[in-house]
Length: 296
Image 1 (tube, one colour):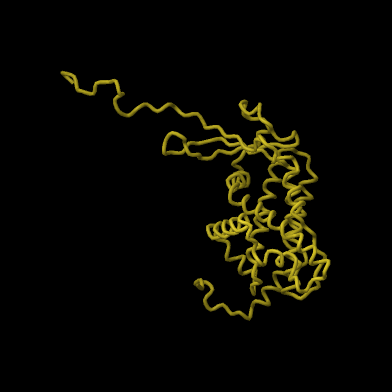
Image 2: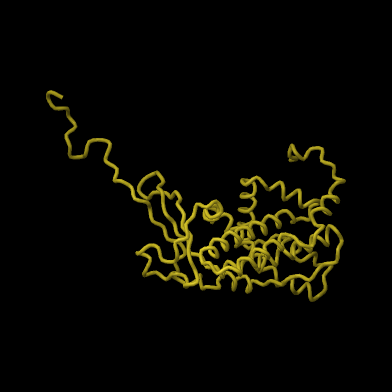
């Protein structure tokens, strides 16, 4: 169904919008690369933790948004991307994409969006595209899950609502296998369901962070965003296709598990409820006679 704001749009302006959007060779990947360079130049542990989380979420959202806007080769992807500014709509689209990838049903346009149409590729390029299918599926599955499952931590860090307490925060976690010393953690306050009642309680949650893994994932996402950008410039502006970055599932898995975070027993998140007073019963105790006494 046509949205109210789309009624009467003149389709003849798509070419002008595409020239404006894709006119520069430096797309969103260039901004991500610049931020990665700044992150690599700092040795402040806390800054590295916070910025690696921020940058990973930023890159993941850019990857998913651009894919959703370019799939199906729409006439004006810029407009399609603008339509996804409504977060509930974006969340629904990301959830649908994540479920599709999780089920193993890969979208037909997954590889063409990042590598171009197969019918215009050389045999060598087609081989790269065939290997990229698994890598793209793993990368987009990871990005979709990150946006859906860890938005609270990202928003807390982005708005200054999170603390950076270090690796070992809760004494009861000392016996668990924790991330390597190069890691750290972010801490935020969130509402979690209370086990014995139909209510929620404030909980302090520490999520352990591996900066090197975050950086590796951002690098892969940035490369695939660059691929998408150059493919789009070729499709919409007719410029020659630039050299594309290869990707395999093995590359994506190696980056994601660089610190061995898939190891059994690894603790990635620790939570503890804030202290609450014990609630007194509102009625008489079971062993107390509730019959009014004489004179009351």
